[in-house]
Image (cartoon, rainbow, N blue to C red; front, side):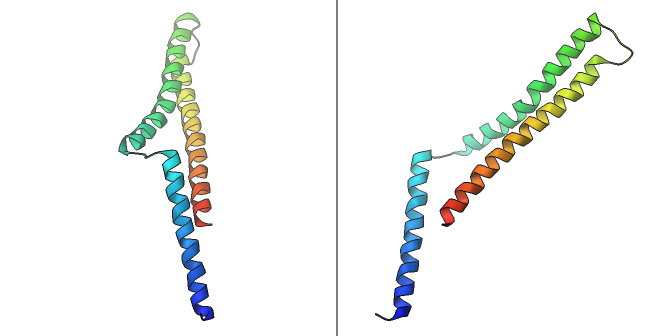
Length: 108
């Protein structure tokens, strides 16, 4: 064999090995369907909606029991939205880092 053939063979071996690793990893993780993606959108939505609704409910209660010159409802509604968005951002960022890590492992 010529040196050129050896290079091609080792490159082919690495490529086949990488594909095999991706398939094995996919089998371990299970198949992710369209419903998985829709569920992720729902999870992000609820991570914003729940703090928003809790903030509004607490604000309504505070406005009824401890009235102030400002609106507790509006203040806590905005605080709930901000907390929910921050929560969703951290969650999406963590998932993004995991996906990037998986992609980098597959490239090796």
